[in-house]
Image 1: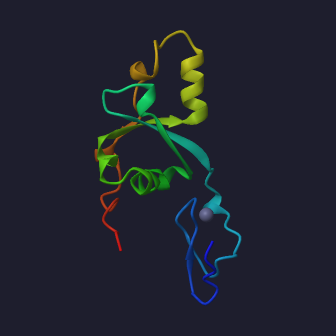
Image 2 (image 1 turned 120 degrees about the horizontal axis):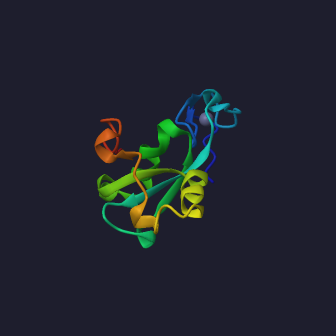
Image 3 (image 1 turned 90 degrees about the vertical axis):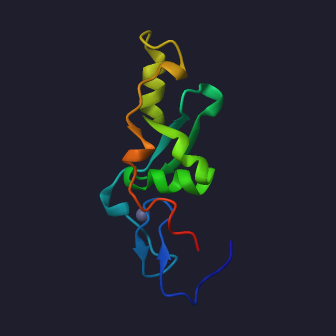
Length: 115
Ligand SMILES: [Zn+2]
């Protein structure tokens, strides 16, 4: 990792909060950090991807990971939630799981802060 000790602020990688120093402890504003699972529209297990962060930050992290194709993904829930759905007998597989949100539900500034 590069040491940015001379910079005034740093951004928490998990919740996006601005910190006064890069080594400052972040409490993520009390928000839980989970693994959030996304599926590409109409696809199955091979399209799954996950990001670890707070709920609010998940679309930003997805865009960071996938690039502009993030728009083709839908949110299935936390990894625990997805696993518990798969453990039940109600759903046949990943492609049958109901989505919780689509990319149109994401904050409008996702992907617009490229520097
Ligand atoms: Zn944080």
